[in-house]
Length: 211
Image (cartoon, rainbow, N blue to C red; front, side, top):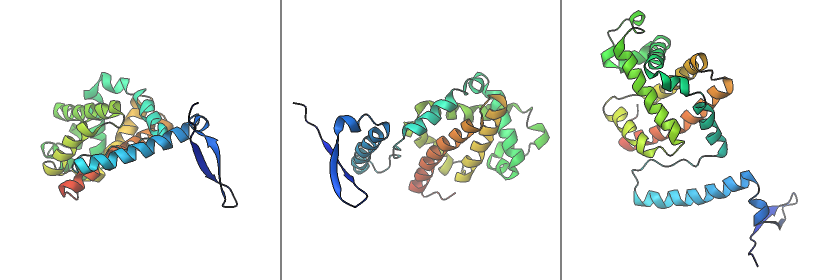
């Protein structure tokens, strides 16, 4: 006979009763996710003892996974012309947040009015969006992508963590205008980038960079 595990529930009187059996619990998506979280948290603790320098793998809910899917549905136009969209992103970033232009030494001397036609700006913007595309398609399993990126941005480029938040918002605006990303999609991008930026920040702290 199949073994049936029981889950203890607390009633409103503070008493405990066991009434839910495993097959019923596993039919609930939220309970499936909670059980998966418990397993992955234990695994993460185990992995942490083996390699303390590894970026922790976030326990991602089905809802954040849906956010990845929503953004990727609108990623096609961006991917079709990384250079054009990359230029739009950096040009808008430098116009809306002029202080960020000084973080890119090769662009410091370029007047704002000339950014749109600058091939180097387009190429660098394309690099940014290609990397974002890799992260989106990884759907949270991004440690191998994010670790070297965080390392170079902390030790070589000295990019403050807030810059990632600023450029994320700009990317959302550009995608809204050029790729049809609606308000829900822009919020999905914020949710996803919060996960990514949290992991970058954790890596920054390991490297002793407080930017």
